[in-house]
Length: 64
Image (cartoon, rainbow, N blue to C red):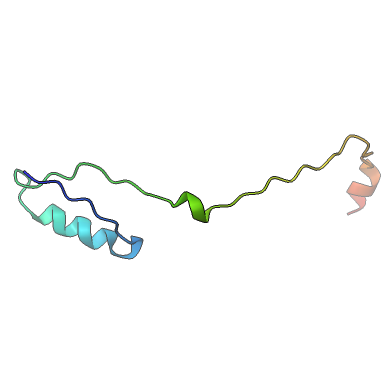
């Protein structure tokens, strides 16, 4: 038996699984379905807002 690893775009994923499911079950076994995200493309920056001295005005909020 051989193992094949593929990087598949979302647009063709259903077609690939449909094809794999049409093959004989005793000859082909789908092991995992993993979604990989490149960590380099994700950049998050946290922003901290201090609300310690903020006074909430209930009447002003109700007027909105």
